[in-house]
Image 1 (cartoon, one colour):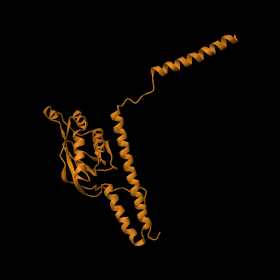
Image 2 (tube, rainbow, N blue to C red):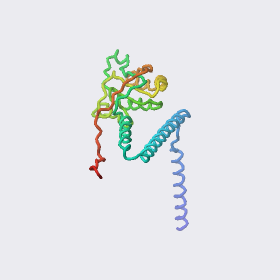
Image 3 (cartoon, one colour):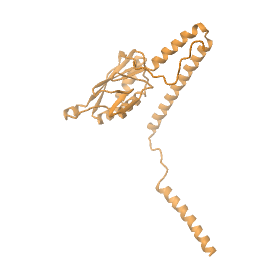
Image 4 (tube, rainbow, N blue to C red):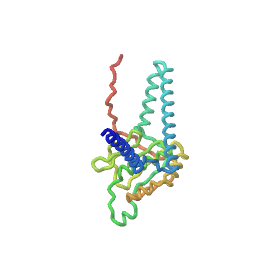
Length: 237
């Protein structure tokens, strides 16, 4: 009886191990099937993000050193300069510089077939911004809505929005401003060669990228920013 029990236990263990091995063979661990160029592109994006973070850290360190070296008389001036800089980074000030205009329009085929284009999808607009992030730019406006690192592209009640404001039905204009004219040319060349045009065409839209110009104007974000956590202390504290 004991021999049969031991033999049964051994068979159960062997059967369990065979079942695990069979399941592993049938469901192998998921592998990364991306090609070398896709991996290199992702690595390049990560390096760019790393470089931007280092630049921000250096800028904050410089601000701290500036405050530490100031006396009481110059502190107010330094604070104002910092606030102005933060307003510019948040897109709250008007800006002008070299850049280009991009038109988003219904495709000629959709017009000929009478297909009504009511909006651009949030996913497609987000993909466009991600494609634009491959190159250096300073300011971005989508259909009159200022876009910054604090902005969000969402679907609200069936409408595509930027900062909670509805994006118009195509056609509409996207404005891009760069630091230099050479940077704007890089933006132009990158977008012209990008596969993002195919993504727009699949949604019955056309992306018309204008050539670089010396001056593009973008309005600041005029919406008020709600302060949920900071409170002003009474004077003297």
